[in-house]
Amino acid sequence: PCGNLSIPPRKRRCTPFLHLHLYQRESFTVHQGDFGYQLGEKTYSCNIRTCPPAITVEPMTPHTFWMTDNREDLIITV
Image 1 (cartoon, one colour):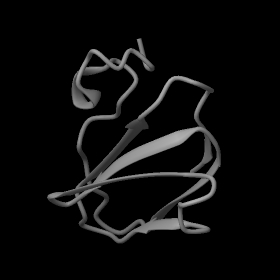
Image 2 (cartoon, one colour):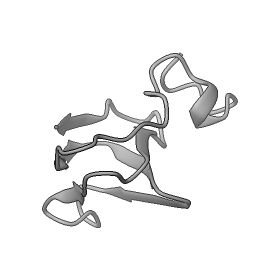
Image 3 (cartoon, helix red, strand yellow):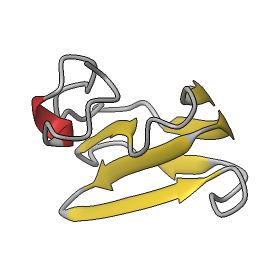
């Protein structure tokens, strides 16, 4: 279900709800796969070659993430 591209990313069971952290800074590092994410109102996608070394989410920023392609598993460090 996580890689079923016929289901919109925010409706997949494996996509975390859009949420924020009051004080915590969160970062994501992509090791494999295609990564989609939302920061505030903007949506982005990248892979191991195009993602920044670490995608940082500042406190009070609504965010979520998902896999954007099912050719290989998405492996990230949070």
